[in-house]
Amino acid sequence: MPKAEGKHFHFESESTIQTHILERFSYKGERQVIVYETPEFSCVCPFSGLPDYGKLLIEYIPNQYCIELKSLKYYIVSFRLVGIYQEAATNRVFQDVHRFLKPRYLKVKTIYNPRGGIHATCEIEKGAIAVP
Image (tube, rainbow, N blue to C red; front, side, top):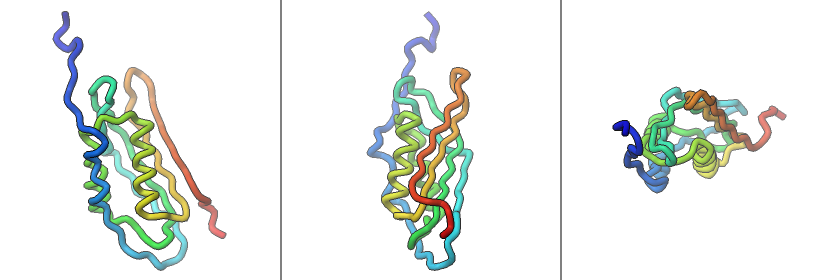
């Protein structure tokens, strides 16, 4: 039997995602689209225990607040050892950011590195991006 057959790795639960670390600052400027992008998003597939790597994009139009970037980076890193499906990870980021900022518009998109020859992209969008 191959050594890797049936191998499983320990991973954390969603409760370890550090939403409490997010910080924000007031925004009173003109309506603008803000995009944050990182190629360093990772979590763990709860089915296989193997890591999922990909690009995370957060696009929003602030209502009253913007996210402080260092806190956002720490929040993103807190997914690293969490066992969560790709679709659920995208939804979790969307829900956390939406609840925290209450923006006029929000889009969260994850573009995962191929696994088993399959490319996966997940995207959630809420609100109107058009400038009135």
